Length: 315
Image 1 (cartoon, one colour):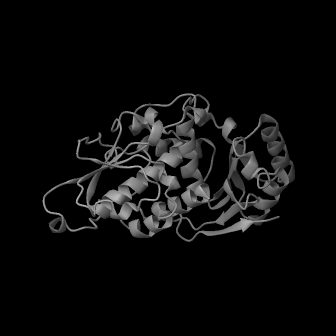
Image 2: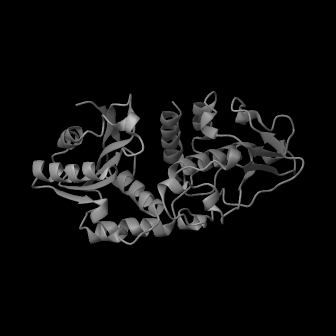
Image 3: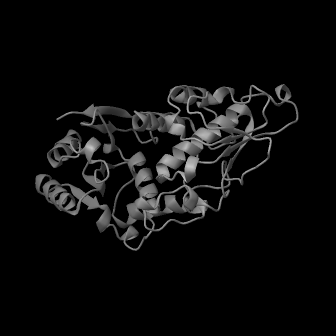
């Protein structure tokens, strides 16, 4: 499924990203002095959520590194609104620097030329798009429908430093949230409920009794942060059930966190939530449930994701 494949590629790319400049995969002397360019132009102005776009951008970065090319976006660093869907946030800041470190690729204006080759076929192998001697391509398709070659990209891009990193302000929001709620880094758990827009996929794994039972696997974790995209009735019931079942544990719910009380941009909230889940020592994750039933339950050592032990949880 496209969603599951997307999650897989995100994991591959995220764990292979490095803070230094990426290594050139194709030696410059093999392609001469002519620069190569990759323009990412979403088909029919396709918009999506921040994490969907992040994975897509990391794919573009990976392709660029693999082909020794320069990646480009519509609007460069200034038109996030062309890529981000309003359904996830009533307010979308057009400046990418709100969300990502734009000093790194791919936040460069398009390099348009009549000689640029349009790539629209979802069956095209993007690893060979320059083999015909092209020096510029316009990717005009949904990258996540390029399933025939999708998983191979992750293998090829591994350790190319294709990462797209969150802005320093997002990290500060995360740290501020930890401080204001009395959370100790490396000692809290995270619960992420994705339900409201994915009832067909996640209605089983987000059942309250499953969530409550799922965190029983981590008796040593005394503090939990809960992010949820769910119905109001569900939110109220989840709060009551968790606190009643575990009176000695501390639960902080996103709508009770003063750090984000006045934040109108849900993409900022979501990005901080992603960092929070990534740094949690234990996690109950329902972003994309396995077989529409099982959540991801993870126990982590605190070197980001290194040392993760994640299993599909079936109650």
